[in-house]
Length: 250
Image 1 (tube, helix red, strand yellow):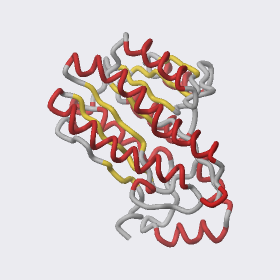
Image 2 (cartoon, helix red, strand yellow):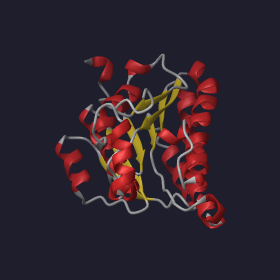
Image 3 (tube, rainbow, N blue to C red):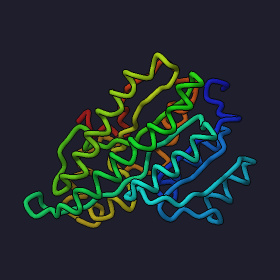
Image 4 (cartoon, rainbow, N blue to C red):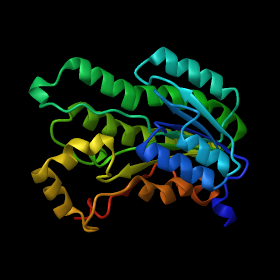
């Protein structure tokens, strides 16, 4: 369907080396987009790159540490000159410790990677989008954009901030042809949730609340990512869309 066709568009996908970011990069490529994949350890010779090139799409790998503000800004300034069409802000990290003992160094790093660096990169890449009058920005939010979580105060604060940032940027940029939205994954089986999956009690409690009856998979995010990156979502702005197997409805 032409509404979902991304042929000829370039998508920058952060946190693309594995998990949700990788699944989104693959989905956008399958819809026609060329991919600039970015993470702290991104490689150009891995299965992701090979698979995207096999589709006939362009693929570029860039290693950027999202805890390093200067590195993020330098990358953003460079890539903005190429005026990409789509930005997927998926890079993230998490640290787990009770709030009373949570090291401030962890707090600072999580907020930098999960919120501040994402604003810095979005600001730079949105400028050519706004000048052109078109573009798509997609953030990865979380269930903790709606809830408080346990033992992850920095992550909960950052992901709540992402929901607010999505709405704020959507308010400013929708009239200029730039759509800003977020996907809020439910409990997805990735490295970030490995500790929860390994805890029998927590895992059982989580599964008991999910109407779909299973942990999510990274490719469960593929459809909504293509939707938000495509012309099909041109009148969607400032939305935080849960993909959670029904978790929030419960």
